[in-house]
Length: 410
Picture 1 (cartoon, rainbow, N blue to C red):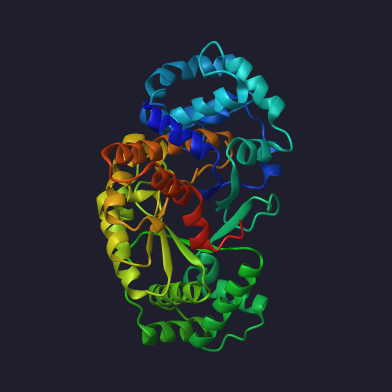
Picture 2 (cartoon, rainbow, N blue to C red):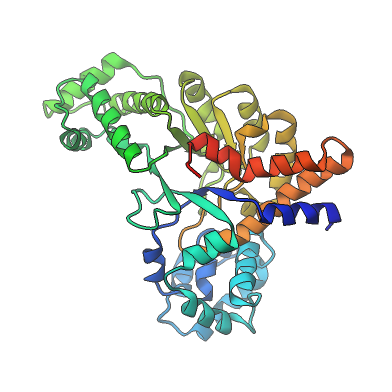
């Protein structure tokens, strides 16, 4: 590692961080669970294990803490040698070293498991996220507003919380909750607007959707479908769902909130990941110019397409959440090219994207700092920016940009 890169990493370690994407539940959920070394092989690392040949049933057995730890390690060890050098696994190894005093391996898994159990207590979020990572807040998605740990967890909800996915029964329930009488399609606007306002008061800063083709909304067809649904007749669910989705996107933008979008690679195995190609979002971005969209995961593997989207569409922001543990080399290459093409305020540099294994947020952040430092050190060495400018960009990537996009009070 070059001395310049090391200096940048050390400087970033002292910088505050906005963790721009997690699936972390309240801390009480984590500490109520049984943990051992195999907890560190949950969430993402699972896909490498299964890609290496383990079946889903075998993986489920591996996570059964009622089974002897030694027995599970014996079955796991061949897979360990197959996956231990992937980026997913590196985050787990870094976490084990930082919090449990040893790298994962056949001579350490018992001690690591014991230390994990002893450390799975109230305060683990503070020890990992605040003290070890210098994370000020983490934007989390668990399908609901967290019922605890709100000092650090800031919620993003599914967009379907507003639209009900086009289900009229869900919209009726929302209308009752907001005190709106449903008589026409226009009333759905009032319902969704009231929901957004209520969620905003509870600290929600955005809503999540998937990158997919969203057809053009046809209001007459949606109105006809809505009236049929109110009358209890069969209705064109697609026409209504599409109209509600488009209106929700506009209303979220009107409220100054953000639409987060999963783009590209899908987390588990056996998927047609082309279904989440970032190009699906281009018509939606063009149709909703007053709404800001936070496009996740660099659209991996379509990182260059994402660069052009970020460059040409002012309402598109590019988020490197999850990316550093998918592939450090791909992320380094993407970020280097993005800095040539995209205004730096539109790039969010880190989101851990974990749930139960909160320790791996630390491992991921170490890798993110390495990747950012690699890119910036190269530019300083090439004379295209100064060291002071590199520090400024690093802080923007790790803190300022996410804070400003989501309007966070940190």
